[in-house]
Length: 350
Image 1 (cartoon, rainbow, N blue to C red):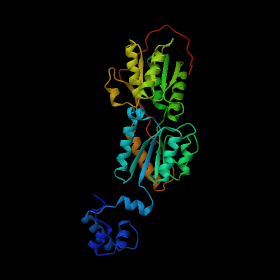
Image 2 (image 1 turned 45 degrees about the vertical axis):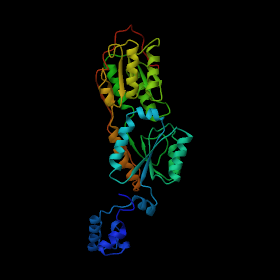
Image 3 (image 1 turned 120 degrees about the horizontal axis):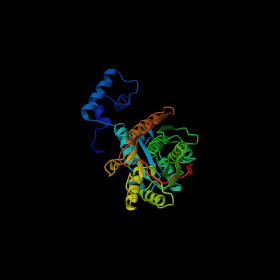
């Protein structure tokens, strides 16, 4: 409804036969209004179809009723990554019924990103933010705290933080994938990982190295920016090397899909010659041939929990740390028994 045509507090006051001040007290749940008057005012508001003006409400309480999500990745990577659409859908599941608006910005990590947070706070465009893709020694924690914004982090930072966090065990899914490949007899495997500066990518890489070492596997790690293009390049480098792996564990599904394409172009058959696992269990991966073995996470549920947690933070609830259910490995056709190759001495090189 347009601001000019929507019913106002004055309209409600006239319908109920009371003052505008009394209407304001009643609609905001303040004391000093008799039960009979409160009921008459609420009935008048319902009859007129009155709803609070977000603009007027913002001006009256000095809040924006908005939450910021600043994503420090290139737009191309964001567009291809299925995590963010699902995560944002989960945020909106909660925000759409709570009166909070999501303000989204895609920025270049670094100075531009820092300035974006400062601009959002200075212009009072958001009351709080959700911090994704935590970095090693993440400077955003101190910046956001200094700006006086509420915040929730996805994952637990490796620096002191006054904010609530919502976490999924970053390494569990990778451990499941490596255990699965070990059970299939693979002894030479690789991990196509995300940037070392991102905590969840670093933790996945660490889990890969530790689990491979525990199984006595030869293990290599290739870092990327999480894009399909760099995932494809890493795959080609691994498969054209002197000692190609028999299995590759990818840190997301679209790198795994790109890797599958490279393997097929090089004349390999998956999983006869090479086993592949992904991460995020996207819809596309389920319909490939062969269908992709992948770590399943619930990004939409993660978004909903993060949204509820930021609402609680804005209401003044003390910081808390929530651990979501551990990811699971969905086994499909892209993994199989290790191919027979001449034996080499084993020992982790990760």
